[in-house]
Amino acid sequence: MLTKINHLGVAVTSIEEALPFYRDTLGMNFAGIEEVPSQLVKVAFLSIGESKIELLEPTSPESPVAKFLEKNGPGVHHVAYGVQDIEATIARLVAGGTRMIDTAPRNGAHGARIAFLHPKSSNGVLTELCEVHQGSH
Ligand code: CMX
Image 1 (cartoon, helix red, strand yellow):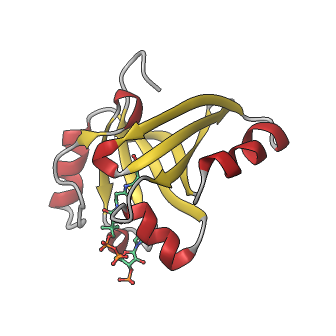
Image 2 (cartoon, rainbow, N blue to C red; image 1 turned 60 degrees about the vertical axis):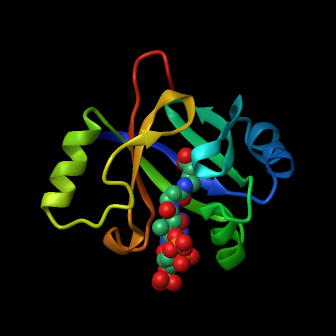
């Protein structure tokens, strides 16, 4: 069902301020910034080998990431798993009693189709399913 960890999401108050640590101090490859209006966030992508980090900066006080920062401060926000068939994975999770935030996929950054599980159903870890197609990240 899951193929690998696709990325870790890290909530930051400012991508501009956080980026030098990941890009310059850790030496990760910086692949650009994209706004995801449906999630009210701006996202910076960094990679090292197969592994990716997304820095998430809220674009509105209504953003889930703004609420997370208010409550917890900056830090790890979610774990995203790659899946081959997101509809089938959602259906399997729902059938098993998992509480989903998204019962239908929505568009994430880089053309991926994504869906979040509720952290109450995943031991307090906000969990994302991520169906990525060839040519996107
Ligand atoms: N990790 C773990 N727990 C989280 C969390 C996170 N990232 N965000 C919220 N929670 C917890 C809260 O601590 C709270 O727990 P308690 O009830 O024990 O206090 C509970 O979830 C409800 O949180 P809330 O602050 O009251 O906020 P909301 O109910 O308004 O929203 C949630 C919570 C998870 C439904 C919402 O944040 C959401 O829909 N998240 C998914 C979408 C998202 O985060 N998008 C940004 C990522 C963009 C991308 O990668 O593309």
